[in-house]
Image 1 (cartoon, rainbow, N blue to C red):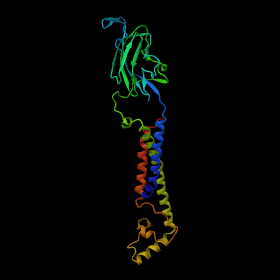
Image 2 (cartoon, rainbow, N blue to C red):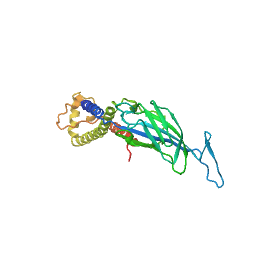
Image 3 (cartoon, rainbow, N blue to C red):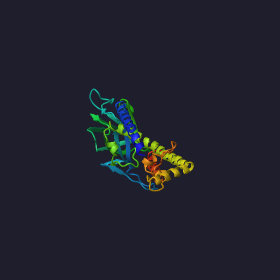
Image 4 (tube, one colour):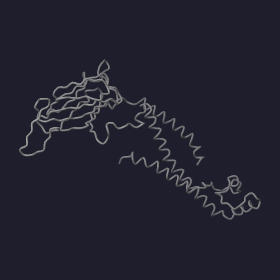
Length: 306
């Protein structure tokens, strides 16, 4: 096993170098992208009442009568790897602001903005929200809470925007699910972006290498053991005679099987077809290989989706 590890050290060093080069190449040649994610956190009809015959209700919001009141919570994030520039010669938005549109059967009553990661100004009319800013960097987000009046339909309120608002962009819509808004990031996510592809490739190569090498090492020990057992059966008499001579010459104190002989004595065995000896604790070593393989395979259950 130690010989195998010694042989693997230069191979592992070369692979680590290759992984580093691949990671750096991918980082340098990574294509830039602008991706804006509009995530719905919650959507509540605050004035919904049970459907009961004869039951009527009237509502007002800030002293103005309304038909129905909705509260919607959004988080809008630049999840791409390029800055969205809102002003100047290098701006990559078409107009002076990004426009979010509300379906026409609803009316915007009020907008609250909170937890802003960047400076921006927000304005609106009945069905539109306008977001103006200098720069919107990757990972920065804007949290909006909208209070809406439902006018005529039974539709669910939605806001949308066009990817043509921003040059070469993509808009993604999602809904808040199991994940927690305040969930902690992994150590990998906190690494500098230039390090992430290097770490990814190093992990992938080393993980794959061990998954391949563990069965090979296990099979190698099994083959050694089988050859050893077969050799003992076919050379038992010759071996016993040799051991007895060693004992008579006081070179050995007692009878020993090849697997328990000191290596320097086994090296003097006259036959050229003697086998390579398996590990003394062969059974324990086999169990160790199987346990290692299991430990390496188990994480795949949490990664691979079928």
